[in-house]
Amino acid sequence: MAVKTNPVTDSLVYRSYDPWWKRPDPASLVPLGGDDAFWAALAATGGCLLVTSRSQGMAAIVSGSARGGVAAVVPVPGPMGAAVDGTALAIGTADGIRIYQNLAGEGTGEGVFVPAAFHFTGRTSVHDVGWDSAGKLWFVNTRFSTLCTVEPLVQFAVRWRPSFLAEICDGDSCHLNGMAMSGGRPAYVTALGETGSPSGWREFAPGGGILMTIDQEIIRRGLCLPHSPVAREDGVFLVESGRGRLMHVSADGKEETEICEFPGLVRGLAPTSGHWFLGLSRIRDSSGHVAAELEQAVGDIDTARLIALDIDRGVPVGEVALPFISEISSITLLPMKSARIAEPMARDFDQFWVFTVDR
Image (cartoon, rainbow, N blue to C red; front, side):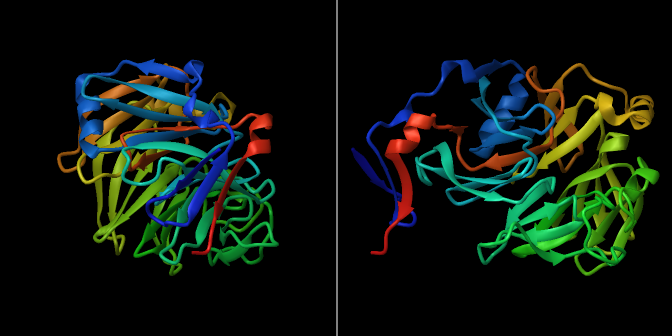
């Protein structure tokens, strides 16, 4: 039996009679090509990238060095947004939020994330997730067009809704999808339509998207499928998927700057102190007439890609193809050079626990 204490909290413990998480499945590791500039940019961050794909039901952690990289792939049901806080990792899924714990602990340079908790939200189409400064976990409840928090004894607690939503209903009215945190709290959201009618956003797609503040001010209209907002002191960065571009909008919404444009559907944005990383996806066939409009507007690609970007100059510096994914839902920077998600087998749950102890 092994007992280990997390060096950060000094109270987190795991116990197991068989350290199954130390035996990665070789079949889950996919070697990646890409150019040297991409791997150098990723290595310079000291981290690795968690990529989710809802349509294909998988998550992949991309790590490497200046010489090349690998993706550790694991099945996850309908993964969307993800967030990391210390040794905890949260991933929004088809019917809830999975929370993983890093058994390697902080400061080790590696991550082995194992399931620690699951919060059932029902079929709410969880999109972006994020922890606030008080340790509360927020998420975008797309089906109910609201921002919610995880609370005991309920599937979700509604904390915010757009002013144009007259009542709480499950009709996916505006397709609320993106949430940007700033100052330890939600600050901006993106949606695909300014409407409170069930499925009303579809009448405005693909060019009726909005960027709005939590204070109910819509600072940008007419966006084409906005996603992945990232807040900064001078405003917010976001991707306009339907026009294949990354853009910046000032905090008051009066100034808009195109950072760069890509020949494909852009989705997923991970900022770092150096290069930023964004995702380029194939156009979803199930999008119907919107798919045809998007293909004409931005073109299509053969497989999903990760792009390393010089954000100051607005210039891509390197890329890597992900041959096992056609559509990227989100990209999250993890603060360790390599990591993987270790899913236990049924027999492992009989002899494995993660818990805290009062000291």
